[in-house]
Length: 314
Image (tube, rainbow, N blue to C red; front, side, top):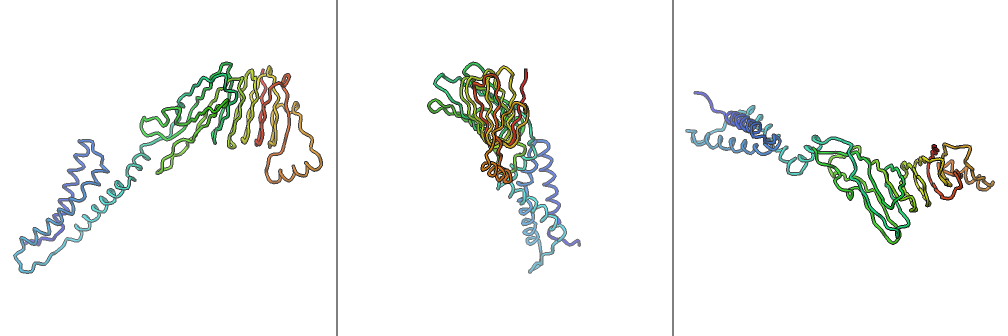
């Protein structure tokens, strides 16, 4: 008579149930990960039922359980995998893993922002955070922001859907404050390659102040009729037509390129030269110069920048 070892039926039933679940997951489009997380308690039920049946059918007064350790080990491995999937599902890591593997980094259009400002607005203050920004001018009183952004997408769902997702605008008195916000980030898997390439269009008649947190700023003023200020930038690119009437004041910058012959550098006294050498040794920008175009009526002041590039075009 063949000896019944507890575990052999459990292993067979486990393979049977696993095959059935995986078959239905293919036919009914179930999520295989959730199937593995949900079916493993059947293993304990089958193994427990097998022990009870063995004890019930045994004719011995004190039956001795005989185990098929290889089968039980197989059942234990499958159960452990199932418990692992359950833990991942309960902690939310399963969903984050699916999002991570289903996501991809794309470049998309920023939701456009257009705002008509009144004559009571005299000044626009811009904080572009750590993103590069390009600034141009128009003759009317409209402020616009557009451009592209690079972020992590899951499926076809847009990363940014409204201008408020990346832009904060507030008017206080005669000043309009414009702030580029950081892109949203997940608390789980790291969102890679996030960046914004924004273009800001402002009225040529409004004063402008830009703080950039040491990133790149490109200025393309046309028929400027106000004053601009740029502080704390790694690089400032000025693209200017020859017809502009501007005075570019560079204060405490590291390097100046373009139109070298026309720059008027500030002479240093002996005391200030010593201070300048000390600051240069510490890596602090120290150069100051002025560039005048036309009658130099409207100033553009650039301070605490690592580099200035000037390009004058006809």
